[in-house]
Length: 231
Length: 395
Image (tube, rainbow over all chains, first blue to last red; front, side, top):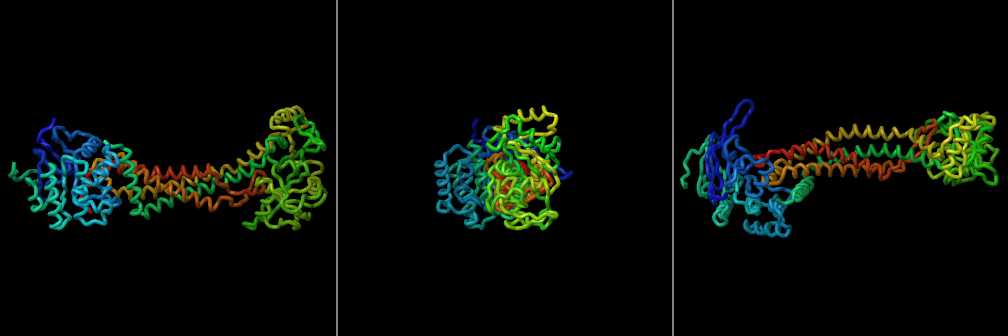
């Protein structure tokens, strides 16, 4: 079943055990994210925004509650099933880019395509297209260490979009960049959202970064403290 | 979903290409593996060389007689009468001079080892022309054959190589008797090269053996004649003798150093455990250093199997490089190395270490054993690494 609701979280609870202490992050969180949304999640450290992003990305599981993605429940999938689900649906963009230092830009971008059935020629074509989109076609053969922070993050974006996922999850994507470069990256994300219809969820501390999103949710102690203004 | 093989090959390639970032740790594992393999190969090459030296001496169509239960030539006695009876046994080849039988004496003399300048036992064998001719590949390389009835002797090439005082033309004193070295012989590298040969009748006289011998060798028309000869010996109560083919006799003698191979495996296995500890450390460090990369790949959708196999292969590659290095070192240091040690008759056997392809395979096996176990547990950790590590805020 396909609906315009991409993510639907129902009564999600999440807690951690640290020693004898149980720390509750979420205690019955409900939220929905529509297809084509560009959502910024803000909040102080420890508010649960990264945990939420991890649960949306299928790298962390709720203690209880339900997580639905595009009409299918994902919180009960096995680790192997989640790997496949992530490969098919999610593109990750990390604060520190997380590029493979021994691979050049093109090889880094190609990684998600190794999980598909595309031929080497088709993979090369897709990599070129993705690198052109982030305006780094001329840097395809460069290693990450030969690129600036902004260029590395653009390679990471190319890697995130190369297999054409529905959703991009961004964890402080501009946290390691100067203002000017951060704006370039955010404009690129905005372009991917508006022109290519990618749904984007971005965790950030930076209100200026959040201003590029269509809407912003503020988390504090596991709850949304301000109502979604755009909803 | 793409092939698991493309995932695995990509991860393996990444791991191998990043080895340079962990150069010293990787090198430590390579060296540990190399040392284990080199030491194993040294022991195996020693056992192999010794065994081959003895086993290659024996012929299938020569029967050797020793006194019943004596096991080795040194403590055997055979009388002239017994030799005369043996000459009538079925299957014994005859030529124009009669039955081809070589009654021999085997006594021990002292020699000084070149390597340690210590005394060691050398066999002095008494034989005649027939006995000389019965040895496979026998050849006088320098000088000439001893003259029957004189105190002349010829020395095996191994003795010349490993012991002082046996050069051609030199006089050698054993007890009160002075011998002259008149020739050097080879027998294709086998155990006979670790002997001195002289006329059997002179030896009988000088060592007060009367007309007795210690062993007799008989040329059979084929190895199949052995059973008939054995039946002949068992049927005659005067012949309280054991008989077997010369090759079987030396094969049994060669076993006396087979413990060296077992010893080599024991030593190497203990060392391999030590190497394994170091290698485990290397691989755990590798996984720890690549934790973010592994987690990132897993976040992208790579399987945990690819992380597992990638780590195992990295360990196998390092251990295999070490194994190859150890094999090369062992080959350069030990292959063909001459040594002498105590053989079955309390005498020195001169032999050369020998590395064969079979031994290199055994070296490879222990290297891969180290690699597999060094990689297995860290690979397990890599496969179970939480994907969430990819999101940790560390550069």
